Image (cartoon, rainbow, N blue to C red; front, top):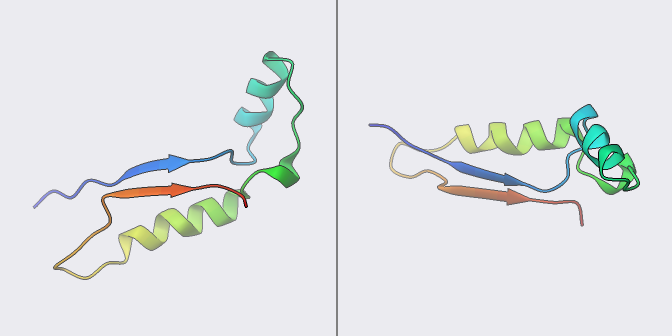
Length: 63
C-alpha cells in the first residue's frame, strides 16, 4: 500500500526563506517563522501512525 501525505508548511526559518524574502525586498524575521526543528517534528509525527489510518494533509504555521 502506498500512502501519500501532502505537507503545506507556512514560513519555516531557513536560508531559503531568507533568500526569497531578500530577493522580493521583504523583511526576514526568523522569530515570525516556524523553527526548523518544530517543522521536522511535525512532519516526523505524521510518519508515526497506526496501520489502519494515516494523515492525508498536514498544514502548519506559526501562531
